[in-house]
Every structure is written in C-alpha cells, then in structure tokens.
Amino acid sequence: MHARPGIAARFVHALAFVTLSVALASPAAHAAERKKTVVKKQASSAVAAKRPVAASATKVSRKAVTRVKATRVAARSARVPVRAAAVVPERLSFGQLAGLHAVTDPLDLKSSVALVVDQETNEVLLSKNDHAVLPIASLTKLMTGLLISQARLPMDEPITITQDDVDTEKFSSSRLTVGTTLTRGEMMHLALMSSENRAAHALGRTYPGGLNAFVSQMNLKAKLIGMTDTHYVEPTGLSSRNQSTAHDLAMLVNVAHTDPLLRELSTSPGYEVAVGRRTLQFNNTNRLVKNPGWDIGLQKTGYISEAGRCLVMQTQIAGRKLIMVFLDSAGKFSRLGDAERVRNWVESLPALGSDKSFHAGANIKG
Image (cartoon, rainbow, N blue to C red; front, side, top):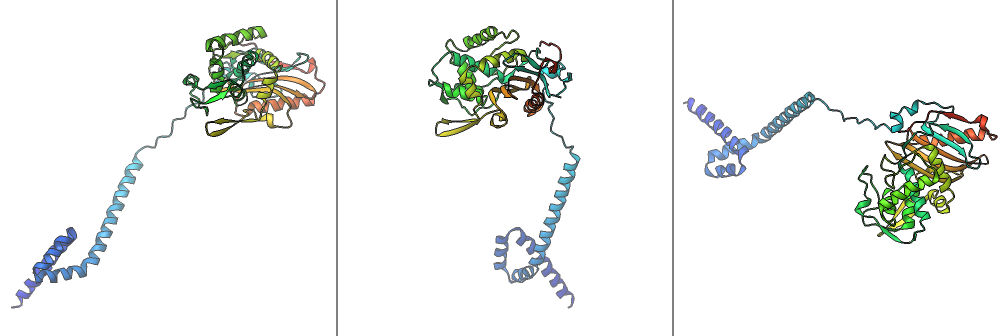
C-alpha cells in the first residue's frame, strides 16, 4: 500500500525532469504539453518553481564554458610567437657609401660636403669635399627655374598637370592632382619655394621643344656657366643621376642670384593657389627664410635618400655676401644647423682672410 505512492512520486519527478528538458529546448512544445494532461500541468508547475534555479545554473554553466574557451584561446595565442615588424634600414647616401662623412672639420659640420665662398671676392672661406660629385636632389630646380625665367616665356600662360608629371621615380605625393591648371608663374613659385615636383616637371614638359629639349638646355647652360662636373637627366631632382659638386653649385647660385624673379620666388615664405573650389597653402621648405636673424637673397633645399639633405643659399653675414653650399647632410635639420654654425663662425671672425679659411677632404668623383 505504501509502495505505490512512492512509485507515483518517482514517476512525477521523472516526468518533471523530462518536461523541464523539453521546456528548455522548446517553449512552444512545453506550452502544448501543458494543455494535454493535469499531470503535466502539475509537473510544469514544479518545473516553473525550479526554473530560476535551472536558468541560473545554465548561465553559470555558460559562463564557465566561456571562461574555458577564453582560457584555451589565450593559451593558444600565447604559444604563437609574436613577430616584430621588419625594420627596413635607411638607404645610405652616395656620400656615406664613399666615406665622405669620415672627413672632419673644425666646425663639426653634419654635411659631408660644404663650401662657403665670398661672393664679391671669390675667396673660399670653407671647403669640405667640395669637388665630390654627388646627387643634388631638388637643388636641380634652381637650374629649372633659371632656364624658364631666361626663356622669357609668358608667366600668365596656363599649364595643366598631366599623368606625365606624376613621379614614377620615387612615387612621391603631390597636392597638384592630375588635371590641376595653374599659370606658369604659379608653377615656378611652387617649384622654387615649396619644391613641388609636378610643377617643376610640368615646366620642363611645356618648354618649347618638350622635355628632352629642356634637359639638353639644362646641360648646355651648366657648361656655359662653367659647371664642368654637373649633369642633368630631368628637371625635378628626383633622379639620383642629376649630379654636381659644391664647387659647381656655388657658380649656379651666383648666376641665379642675378635674376630678380628667382630671388623673389625662392625666398617667398608662403603662397596660396586656387585649385578648383579649394585654396591650397604652400610653404617654403627652408624655415630660415622666416627667421629675422637671416638675410637670405636666394635659396633652395633638396632631399632624396641618395643625396641626403642639401641646401644652397646666398646670404649676407657680418657685412659679407656669401654663398653657402651644404650637401649630403645627415639628419632632418642638420643642414640648417650647419648654416647656423657657419654663420656663428663668420660673425666671430669679422676680418676673415685666407689665413682663417680652412679646407678639408679630397676631390672625389662618383
């Protein structure tokens, strides 16, 4: 008599367990089952009473599984070796490869090539590897500007940037997109002041006879000036085959300084141009032009990895008109630092003579 209630109770509990499993698997099925029998209603009530506990247990179980999975993922990740980004060594300049930086000088210049000449007396105040033939980067644009200016071409003539002007040598960027149209004068301004490569290339491309004729004129002009160790292959300086010496570049600066347009454009601190609906602001690549402590009559900067940092200037220091040339300078601002070191040296020796000048390095052609 007493065994039967026990069996019934066990049956109810078993049925409740089955119903709980079904309810967790499918609420709709659970609802259907509740309509069929009273026993299932009672079982479902029992399940309802137990559901919060079961749900909590399920959540805890899921969290535990999640933690286990996370732990396993972390463990797998820890076993995977971390690969550091590949460090690409900076490309050595021609001057570095030739060992020019091993040559020392009293001013501890960071440029492997330097030349300072009195513009009026031609007295060499400082020379360091001044006959070494090296790439000259955007110093090339000084010759480009000189030819365009002396050609007396109309400066208000519109010139459009084409795909031919896009740099395929170094793949450098430019804000002058293909289709941009500016006047020849504006292109000149950007090439000399901001060292705009596409502008410089467009000036050479639109020269009478085309780009090849322009490059031929560049080399002819160099010979006429007396630049015997200079050679050009294009008008921007992006090619490392544009090469010269500090000695030759000093002669170019001397000639270019006689051109009022080159003096004005190369020392302009900034310039705005309208490109479509936008106005673009360009600045001088040589921050010394904005320094009131400097009196600069003409300047040009240049850089490609093969040439290092380069700078040429005509300036007046301690009452003397000087031409400065710095090539293959190591460090972003070191060419400007070299210019400052030379200026301080000249100002400390106002009565410089040949006995105060110094020369370092051998003549190296590359």
